[in-house]
Image 1 (cartoon, rainbow, N blue to C red):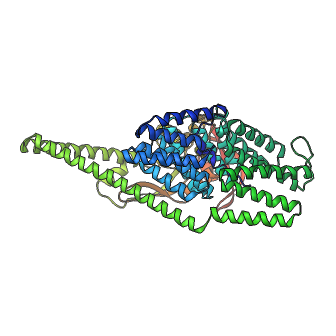
Image 2 (spheres, rainbow, N blue to C red):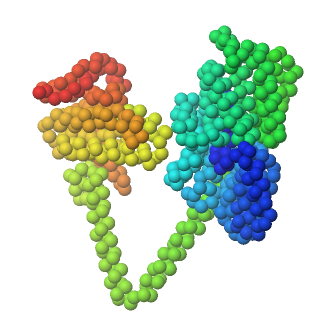
Image 3 (cartoon, rainbow, N blue to C red):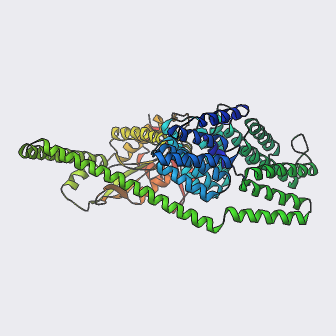
Length: 604
């Protein structure tokens, strides 16, 4: 499936107005004529480039280049960032990806860190990598743009970035994941705009791949109509190519299940529509200088001629397709792009070093000023007291941190320089708790929301563990591990662990995240001998090893969401106090089939 909606995020910086846009551009031009060579003129030229790109990309670049010259002359960094960004968008639109990246990286050089311009530039860079089919880099830049939009609460940008991420997943044929992002973007779009049109066309492409041709055409035609109403030639071109491809799918369908109707015609009519839509898309792409969409049109034409048995036409279309493909993805261009990336990284590193040096110099000035403001004796005593206070404070802080990450008994031994610490315990119970399906929640929500949910859940588990006297060992992603019976042995270790597991199950029974997502938890238990010890020299971790640890982990990973699964060994040790239901034989990695049990509750 060939969907090239990389125009999506680029359009997030635009506001096509159909009938009013021409009037708006004329107004900007009039205002430009009365401006002096100052910051205002640079910003006006940037805005004109932004508005003109879907009307006349060549003239738009001229406006941006003029704006760059003015901004450089007066040292106006914001103007340079905006003009370089918009010029980069224009070059991308003309399929000149090398020049596009060159200008976009320059825009990042002058853009404010974490600001709106940097966010939009990230999305435009992602767009170029998407067009070059480097999906990994494209996703990286789109997510960076999305983070800034969330951080600055730029509501109109968020759906564009979400939609663009969805488009990449479509290109990678991850349709289910793509639909999550596209539908979320669809919900956030409050009015008809270029982004909404692109989302509709992309969703139509997914339906086409599934063989739902009527649904596909309905969405794509709606997107085309919206693009026409907005005066968005780029969106029209993408939509028409996509519609032509859907009609190709209909013409080539061999299942015999398609019944001609108003949207899914006979093969002959479908082929006629392939040709008419492809020709229209090609002419528009040629007029706009959009090489990628011309390539898409030639690919559709090639398949059209193949279906109509026109060998000469098929050969010519294929030759033109190869020619454009080589132009867009040439080895020389890829090497130059790599060189640009390396230079950009070097520039960013130099920028970081310059900022660090300035900070060091500033600190030196502060120290010198303080030294001159007081006498040597008072200053010396003051510094000594501060140092002593700082050392004591840091020592207390380090002790608190040590107690937070290690059991108290182990922390005391470590402070006494005992190393290595390794102990054998004949009896202990291990508890593993995992958040089922939490990865899907993390994929579609901002990082802050993901970490906030994990913090709330794990803090609750810490409280429950403390209530029953268990020791938290660590968290691994969205998994929580605790142990009962060490470092202080206790005869009721298994019963205490069972009580904690039941408390967690009850507390988290109807747990939902702030956005309404329901999260279920799997819990695994086993008991037996373990080895416990401290590893690391600078970053300490107290960890456990043994077959019972592995089995508890297997009980969790093969368990049922919302239930507590345990081994037969654990059930025999606690069945006098707790009720169980047999789950039957379960395939356990490294052990084969084993009978496992579901902990139901305490006996009355």
